[in-house]
Image (cartoon, rainbow, N blue to C red):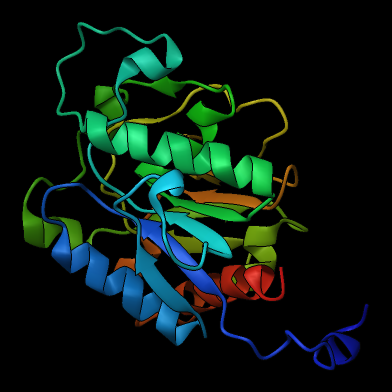
Length: 239
C-alpha cells in the first residue's frame, strides 16, 4: 500500500491510543514529556498503572516503555548481589503489558530502561555496569547530563534511520547499564561511535519493536526526536 492509498483508509486519520509507563513513584515530569511527545506525534496517551486484565476502557494501540530504575537482574539471570536501585512493581507491570502486546501484536517502543526491558522480556540480557573507562568522562551533575551529547551511528534501512532521517545523531546519555546480548529476533541498529556500545535495537515480530538507549523525550526541540515519536505513533495507527 502506498502512502497516498494508506491515507484513504478509514483509520488513516484516527488518533492512536498510546499507553506509556514511567516509575511507579513520582516521575511526573517524565510522564508530562511523554504525553507531550505523543500529542505532538498525533496520538492520545494513557499512563499505564494497572495490569492489562484490570483495564476497564479502551486498550492501547501501542506501548511506550519509558526510562527509570534498573531492571532486577533476576529477570535475565544476572548477578543479584549487584547493588542498584530497582522497581519490582514496575518490572511486573511492564512484563505483563509486554506479554499482552506480544499476544495482541501491538507495537512497542522502549526508551533507555524501556529498550532494556524489550530486550530482557524477549530473552536477551544486559551489562549490569558499563566499563568505567567509558563513563569516566561523562558528566555527573544534573546540568551536565542536560547538555552532554555523544555521537551514535545508525544502520541504513532501519526503522530508526527512517524515523530520524539520518544515519548519525548526537544524543543524550543517562544510562549506566546497556544491552549485552540482543534477544532472538532483535537486530542492533545503532551503536555508540566511541565504544561500539549498543544504542538501538529493533524487531519485526510479533509486531514492531523499537528501542533507543537515549532519551528523545528530553530532546523534543530537535526535529529528529519529534519525528521518532511520530514514526512510532503512525505505525500504531489503524492497527
